[in-house]
Length: 153
Image 1 (cartoon, helix red, strand yellow):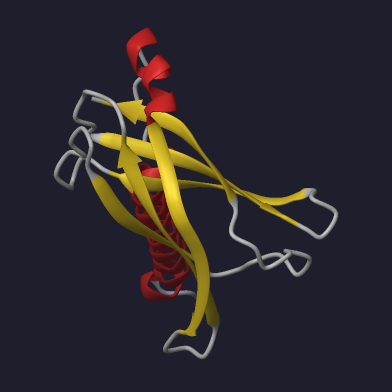
Image 2 (cartoon, one colour):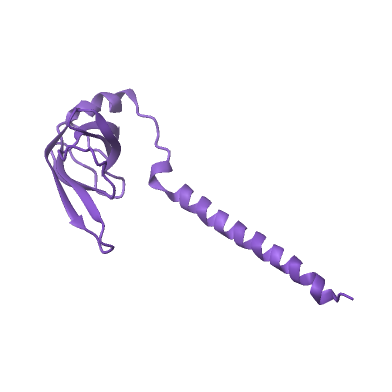
């Protein structure tokens, strides 16, 4: 003869599993929604599109360091200059890394100027750094080709 306690144990296990799955799913959804790569940015105006040519990137150099887990992290260090007449609140740069045959092996976006930082004023130069945890094996070890991809005033 089964007791009420014996019948409720499987129900409690199922409820606990469903509750745990809901919590994990909620945390993953929250993490995904807060990720900067998924944040939709407004479309650029015609003025902003024309302004993309007002930037130059100088002194790109690569370095590497070991993190606390013993993995190698590769860094891009460079300086961006605003040659235009407007202060810039956001600037995204397209980075294209190549192999020895000059084929693109990695394409990334660098957020050189973000709304969290002071705007980049006309004529101002500012350094930026980007970290990469995993670089392609066939990368030619040279700095990437860097082009302005997105700007916001």
